[in-house]
Amino acid sequence: MTVAQKFIVADDHPLFRAALKQALQAGNEGVQIVEADTMEATLARVAEHGDADLVLLDLHMPGAHGFSGLIQLRAQAPEVPVAVVSGSEEARVVRRAIDYGASGFIPKSASLNTIAEAIAEIMDGEVWLPEGMEDVLGDGDEEDSRFAEAIASLTPQQFRVLGMLTSGLLNKQIAYDLNVSEATVKAHVTAILRKLGVHSRTQAVIAAQRLEIDPPRIEG
Image (cartoon, rainbow, N blue to C red; front, side, top):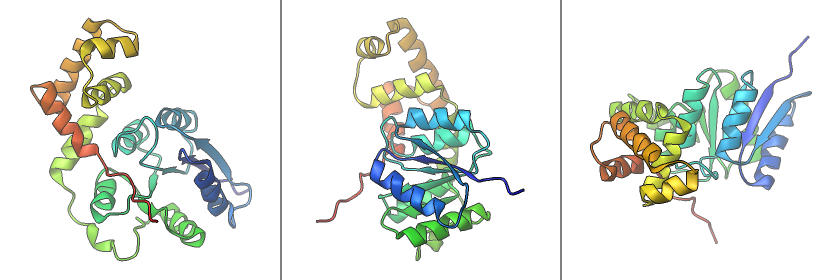
């Protein structure tokens, strides 16, 4: 008996989730699809469904900062492949997504047929890239790899604190928002600096900017 494939579709736009579901169901009888619309929900779904065959991840989701969601997913469940599905289609973004552990990069501008073909190839163990971007692959960037490992070592709470630091919040504001003491926030900041190998909040913020991605351009 054939076991039905299970996919996690992580995107905060209901219409695009519906489009992905349509692509996944094309020719796949009995496919199981789990949905998530925030990064927190995505991590929870992956924890609940560790037997998922593939995660389809939008990089621009509430709770994610650029590549942070991809890095967190790869750290939490390295055995579950992740395909990035994004409107940010620049070669630099594609290359970094692969460097950070994605099994493929599918542009949101692709047709449903192309998306279905890409998913099929990824499920066969191939690394799928948009046409003409095959040359972005090569030797991985060692500095990017080290940074990805450092980010992956942060606890979820430390990652939230880092995001708040990049937004310019003070310890008192972070403590209030997270409902913890300032001493706890200071401990998190100290741990973040150590894990990122930096010596100040400013350096941590600069380091975190490596994760950032420009929002997709809207034509029109």
